Image (tube, rainbow, N blue to C red; front, side, top):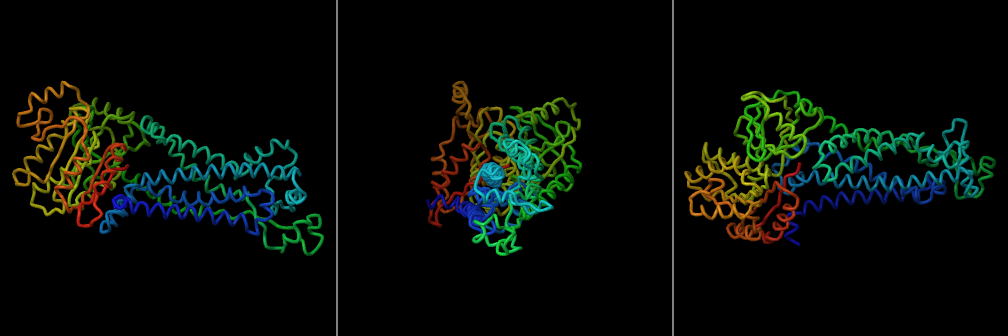
Length: 565
């Protein structure tokens, strides 16, 4: 348990605070509407459904305030920079922005479901009261109105329609009803298109439906203007305890004047206006960056359909492991896709490696393949750079870098930066040891990265620090012919697949063995474990970090970090 807290303690505290605020808001507003005197007559018409409609609405306001913040990438990068002097545990929370975004979205979906169901019941009970189905008090309250028709309690004012059609009429002719339908439909489309299978296979569907959030927030702000839930006004004084059983005498005796009601002032806009302004600034900054000129320095097609783009943009500065969003108007004016940079901060260009994995990337690769030799590619918009967990790699004494397939890209940036640091001078790094693991299904995938590793080997040996970097390459997709070929050439000085001195391993790593080795070689170190790869592997490594971390501060501790964008 203590080992688990080392990696997840701050996250748990954050979630407990968030959950505590949600629970407080729900309970507080539930009690306001369930026991508040001003809602006594409203409760008589609606019962407990009133509180069950309004309490989720309060939770919705809070979470709609939060939902945009985790996707304000520039804001997160700014915060990450301001926290550079703070603990790594605080900075790690920023790397879980998408997870928190999803958690808040699920909460919004749940509270919306409760809110909608409660209001459907409310509409039915309003209608029954208007038709005189219930007691005399309900009928009297439903018949209240003044010459301006503004101090009523029951929002159903029409009686000329078929009673069965009145609820539908109310939903589609009132501000609250129409906007409620619109924002619910938007939310359903956004949530369903965000499912993993759709997002990965049909990214464009995910991308376009996600932008329904604009309609969602517009409808959300307008929704409360309908003021469909009404409370009793203080003037004139009306004692419901005395007058509730004397509805026939309302307005006839001074003790029981006709009760007056008014809709509550809309509050949702006050919750969401700040995040909406921040997000608008975010989009304006993205537009400014999009308009900046980007030139192609080099276009390279690597094996396994991996495209390398080397781009030049004036004033562009980066740190290791960061990522950018790319937009190619020739494919789509609106779509932006994230890619980790493989270039180092010491280089005067930025580079990305793009694997064919969807319609957009396939179209981009096809366009680049058809270009004449030495020609400039299509217009490219670059937004970024943005921070990730890999930025913190040099804050650890020991680093374990784990890349799966194209997930090696952030570590290419790190290893390049190390190469430049040792090439130009003898830098003083806090990091004294790096373990690098790369898992690939195909042998061709190793080719574009092997040159960098060869340069690393040579540089480290020349400086007498060959043990600074330990790397292991794992071929996870292989057959017996691969194994036989490797066995024949096993005695050669370099690996038959990569040309490196370190031989390729066949199969998957034994993580227990790897973590035990790292702990044994670094008995009192703080080890940062960084992954860019699938969620399944993330669960395994996170579990191993907790398992092999020591509670004793004088012994080895593993901190898990994963790329998220």
